[in-house]
Structures are given as C-alpha cells and as structure tokens.
Length: 270
Image (cartoon, rainbow, N blue to C red; front, side):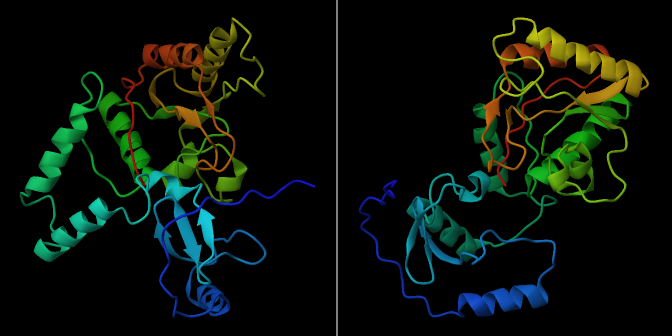
C-alpha cells in the first residue's frame, strides 16, 4: 500500500473560522452565482486562509497550494512585504485612472521593462491573460492590416470571445459562433505529436503545416502567429511541455514571411 506523504512542520496557526459552513456557501453559490463556474471534487473544498505555500480550509486543515491562482501568488500567500505595500497604498489612494499621472505605474513600468529582452520596452497593463490576448489580437490586426491569425491546436488563450476563438480545445469552447479568422496548426508536441523529439526534421515538418494552413485557409496574408511558450491547454492543470526551440523558430518563420506582426514575448500575471 502506498504511504500517503505528510506535510512538513509549519510554524503557523490559522485563525479560527467563524463564517458560514461549506454547505451554506455551496447553497449561496448555486443560488446567486452564474452556473458556468464549476467546482472540483464531489465534496467541494472551501479555502478560507493562506500563508506562504499553504492554504487552509474552514477546519484549519492545511494543504500545499500547487496551483497558486496561475502565478497570481507567486511569492506565497499573504507575504508580509506585499501585505504591507497594499496597506500603505490603501491608506494613501485606493484608485485612480491613467488619464491622471501617478508615479507608481510609471516607475513599475520602468522596472519591468528593464527586465525584458531586446526592444521589448513598452508595457500594457491589463487585468487578465484573456484581456492581454484580446489586446494583442487587436494590435496585430490593426498594425498589419491583415485579419487571419494562426494559433496551435490544444492551446488555451482565454475565456472571453476572442480568447475562446484562439483556443483549440473543446473543453474550453462553448457551442456559439467563434474563431472567425483564426486557423489552428498542428501542435509540435514532442511526446504525442506527428513528429517526435528525436526527429531531426520535426521543426521543418511542423513549419510546413503552418505554411500549408496559410496557403489554403487564408488570403495568404496574416496578422500574426500566437502560441504559448509552455503549452498547458488548461492553465497549468495538465502536464506541461516546452515548445522545442527548433519547432518554434521554424513555425514563426512562415508567419513572418506572410505578413505576420513581429513576434513578441508576452509576460503576464492573472
């Protein structure tokens, strides 16, 4: 029988929970929240507190957080530096807009740009990955004057209308009109793809599929090519694999030849 691993000792005691029971929270969700959101497990888990790499349920039971809100809490839950910075800002000014000057957004953009490669120096701040991809799609089409976009099968690019169109996985698509102008090429999967990691011609073969798609499914001019550098399909809930560099370079080449916008690296946090 497999021994169930135990969490190491952790010098922290969660605060007593005095809110509604999980059953009551589930009832409230079913009555007042949209039915499109879903839960894991037959008995849903209710998390009420977090500290560092751990989260706690209403009974005080501790769990190792292996999801982290898709990098939303990459420095750990309730990190004292983050909590203190948020407290100070909330005491000073809680909200403004970009039509007024404020030092924080400008200084943060400068620090972020300093960590980016080459000439990737201009920042667009949005509230989610879905919105980031929606904006990228709009910019590529506006800049190139072209409409068609090449994406990859089994990819995930968001739950909004344009993101769902770029996505190529039935789990994340609703039965409504979508994907206008989006064409999905084969995913260069080194494990289950048509050409594996040991195939020296894999990059050329996958690139040939991209070119064939451009030749036969588009006008011959495209706005861009979008791909996750680490393909997950479901926001890091499945086994991830990195797009082999030789496949990535070979696939981008025909996209550039046929009018695609210059490749950019997208750094985002949800």
